[in-house]
Structure formats: structure tokens, C-alpha cells
Amino acid sequence: MPDQSRTIDYYFSIHSPWAFLGHAPFSALAGRYGLKVNYLPVLLGDLFAETGGLPLARRHPARQRYRTVELKRWREARGIDFHLKPAHWPFDVALADKTVIAATLAGADAGALAARLFAGAWQRQENMADPEALLGALAELGLSGDLLVEATGARIADIYVGNRERAIAADVFGSPSYVLDGEVFWGQDRIDLLEAALSSGRPPFTSEF
Image 1 (cartoon, rainbow, N blue to C red):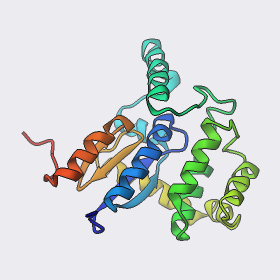
Image 2: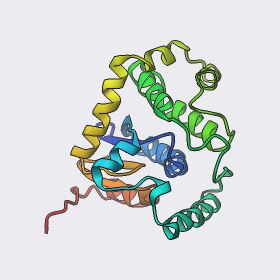
Image 3: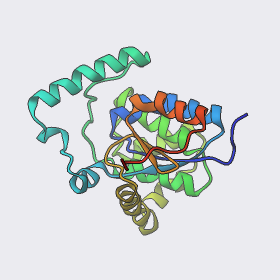
Image 4: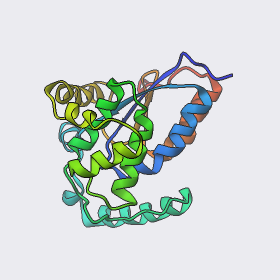
């Protein structure tokens, strides 16, 4: 029986292809185990800056090339067709991320909205920094355009900054990260390990020796 009392913190950004790759299998996992998901979009540039990471353009060419190979591998493994470098990528992701926060506060299905925005960025090659594109995505899901207005406000901006601070406090440094009982699972390739932790009922692992 799924444990309806368990909660997982889900740190991600619409800008992240890895979060896109993991979103559907993670959502399915959360459904199987009856998890309550805290959707916590975070601005990755600021998170990287505070945790020692580098933006893609500043990484060594060998790392950039390996990233491309890995994306091709996981595109095949997940059976998801998407563009490795969409027409509008990189883009200013803040408004898209904050729209997910606004949806959460409004009691809307933030997971479904995130899925649509991921598809817009990585499959449909829509400009997810464009308010009109975001309004179109909201309309497709039957969500009010007022969410976009909310996303531009000070309250959501504060939450977005707070998500970064919360991520750092939780030892999160990349996207996607799934935090279960304080244990961080970084990367969409850790979903199997996350499920193993859920199915076994083991206590969380820590960094202590």
C-alpha cells in the first residue's frame, strides 16, 4: 500500500534537460507510492554559483561533449524524442519556473504544468521565456492566465529565492534533485535508487562515516 504520509522535495528547473528526462518517471514513481511532492523550482545559475558548479558554457569542452553523448543515450533509453539544443535554448527561465510556483500556490497540478513547460522547451521548441508562449501552455491545461500575473509578483520572487536557499541548506546542488527524509538523490538516473529506498523502508543514508 502506498504511504500517503510521505513527502518528497523535488528541486528542478524547466531549463534542465535532465529534469525533463526524469519528470515523467519521477511523477509515475510518486503516484505509485502515494508521495506528496513539493515542487521547488530553483534558478540553477545562482545555485551553481553557491555550490561550486559551473554553467555549461564555462565547463571544459570534454565535459560539454560528454554531456551531449549522455543526452543521446538517455533520449534513447527513455524513449523520448527531443532536441538536444532547442531553438530558444538557453533562455531566461525565471518566468517559467515561477509560473510553476504560482500554480502550486493556487492548488493547480504543478506536475502537469511542469510537464507541459518541459515539452514546450525541449520538444516543441517554444520560447518558454515568452509570456505569450506561457499563456498558451496555461490555456492548454485549462489554467488561468492570472497565474502568469502572479508569477511576476514579489511574493513568488521571494519564494523562488527561498527555494535556492532551501536547496543549499538541504545539500542540493543540481537539477533534478529528489530529497526524501533528508537524503538527496541527484539526477534523473537516481530514480531507481530512490524507488529502492521507498520500497525497502530503510532509514535515510547520511554522509556520516
